[in-house]
Length: 305
Image (cartoon, rainbow, N blue to C red; front, side):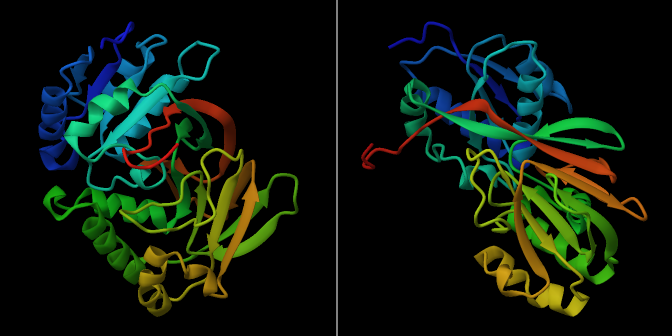
């Protein structure tokens, strides 16, 4: 079987400490009935540029959440009217997107995945900050999250996403100071809060497996907005397991909301990250773009349609 317009496979060979390159080689060896074009990134920004120049064909991002973030930004800056088609083969250090959007974990399943002709429309987010406008597909946040991302990025890839983010979170919790912010959801009132972080979630997971937004759905046209308020350092560390289980809503300092537009301002600028990438500081405006992308609607063999 051949594909009329070959998909473009964008591989970040450095993702996952080099695991992405080896994983794709195994996938390619197993895809004997599929035609495709492969490009490898060499520097930051390459994945976005390749995706932007891909035309209307299917684009596959092979790497981690950062690779997915770049590819989405490239696709959504294309001057086309239709929703781009995209798939994500996650093998980076965090790979949080894989927990919300199913994709093969085994090389022998990739050919069937690429040949799938079922599509799911999903939303994307757009965030405007001090440094301009960026798109995101999974989760963005303002507060300690940006500090955790900065620390986790310095950790050794061999430890994996969960351990790096967990280590970054613990160190940040010991040193981070909570911030006073003004938060507005859609046309609601301006809420004044002292916060540890505010997550604006299209997907449910961040930080290498933290189930930050248990109610988030990437195709409902809404963000789940999770405000973690004035949590002390001791409580912050003690409650970390609750974030991984998705039970942090039991804390009195945690609030949940849903919105299409989120505005966050602060007395002093605080960092903002999206999909595990630093994107600037407050003031920040987050907007959902309903049905912005078409992703492969893949169901592993053995699961009925």
